Length: 446
Ligand code: S3P
Image (tube, rainbow, N blue to C red; front, side, top):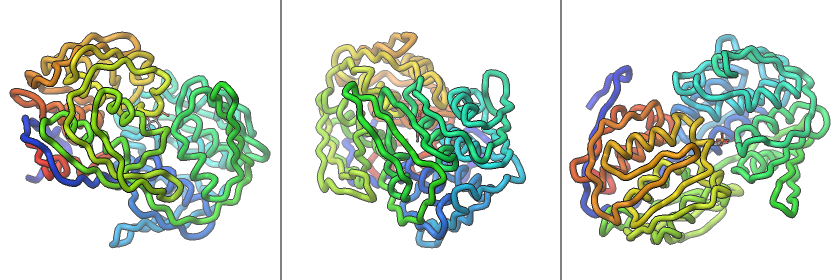
């Protein structure tokens, strides 16, 4: 059915018989953004296979083009990027439209900060509510100047400084975006830029910067603090990158297969970087059967195929320290908890309130609407599960421009009596354009 892109696309997801088959998931969003950015800063042609062609990553591609990179998309799906070299970014002629993408915004603010350019960043209603002060603070220390909307939000205009000032910065929030913004700015600063990370977050920037030839080292303190040192005025050499499948997208078919009785699904080519794989550990602790086969290394990242078999799950009380390793997976983890036996207590998750939506309140409201028993806390949720019984169902769920809310409640629909209605499925295109066809190919009913 053709859709008018300007109109909401409501959809109802229904209880399904056992799911089966093999799911192919799209490329990793974090690695895709970084592939384009670092290739655009290398001198010469990089090739990227498996890039996530979702709206967020396409916003990054458009911005890198606007700042001078030559980016081509071949008919076979390979992306070819001819970079401008560190220091070579050009002033964009118009405002950079970041759409829904916080990662594009914060990482590109880092890149632009150490170039002698002025750039204006705009975004959709969701992105325009998200805090940018967390990157404005360190990037101002590096010499960039900002004119932001009230509360340090978009739209904002940044004036970069070249050469920028290298800094040592201790992260006040556990955020890979803030870490990466500083490191990317540090690429074009003389001397050593140092980020001190008390709680480890996804390390794709570190792995990829090294892969592109930057001089970057990581020292580990006895208490687990990571000290990342990057030598600036780097010369990056072009790479051939194969982007692994996104564990954050795999999360949806994994939870679906665990919850729908009798299911067995294989999810191929899933990135299993330990800084990203926290959900799979949690689901196993809840009693989920998730086997890894064909464990391998793809471009410096651990990858495997997951064989997931329907399982009876038990409630959990996860350690907040694991939050960064599954930060984007809490919405679907809450759905799993709503079907588990017993109580789950999720705490220490204040960061969820500043994602694409306030994911604590959006999930609490939605879960309540479909008959789950949930209590909202300042920093998390308490969920009393059904013990495997179907949820009553209902809706419409307000997705609030948040792709992961839409997909999480689509999975809830599979284990509901009357179905779950989602108010708008369009946000799914930001990270998982093939979600509906994958969902149907496994036997899901929408
Ligand atoms: C990302 C980091 C995380 C995550 C986001 C992608 C990245 O954000 O939620 O989807 O690619 O660096 P924070 O760094 O704000 O936690």
